[in-house]
Image 1 (cartoon, rainbow, N blue to C red):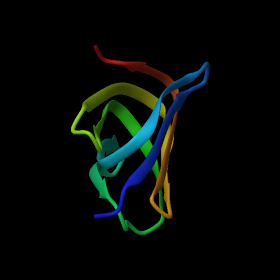
Image 2: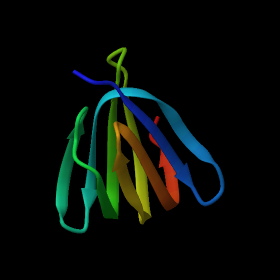
Image 3: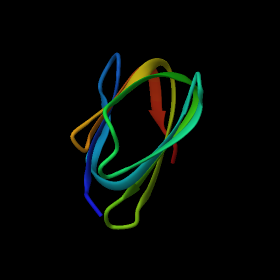
Image 4: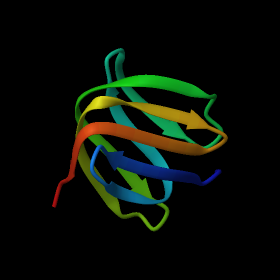
Length: 87
């Protein structure tokens, strides 16, 4: 399985970046799950959680709203107007 390079940023700063095995996010079209080899995609985020499973098994959750998610060549960029890491 291919590794994903993930970057989650808000309007103010980078929230999290690293490698992941999968990412799940809530979009205006519904919930989406992304694994390595996913087709290119651009989606609008809905208010909700972005969940990242790191390659080491670590689970990262970010509350995000007002933004978009982009997938291209196993690189995922999530840009949100507001986002915060859930402890």
